[in-house]
Length: 162
Image (cartoon, rainbow, N blue to C red):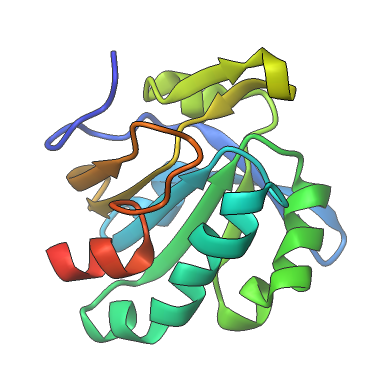
């Protein structure tokens, strides 16, 4: 079942790249008592994710913070090493965007946002979406129909809806 507005996020462990290597990050630790934006991409360095989706949140980060957003989190079904390198390569690290890897697709599957596109080598990946989460509950969800599209899930679109 796909997550929707009003649903509580599952408490799953993801991974970030810390100073000494991969670190576990529980979703509940990042969302409880906080207002957080979570957006997901099918894959780090993939064309739309790299040139449109992640940059849209880098561009709008200050506007989100002005609206009371405590943290912006990018999730991808990639390992924390890839997510850490991608954060540096794109400027997301300097912008303060939290990059979390979901290497086993556990979070992605738990919220029903997984898909597979075998012809292009994307297995058990995340659909493209952006959501506003308040105290662990989804209050706004923008999910794209096509993984190659970044319109309603872009930073500017989510920002306009808040």
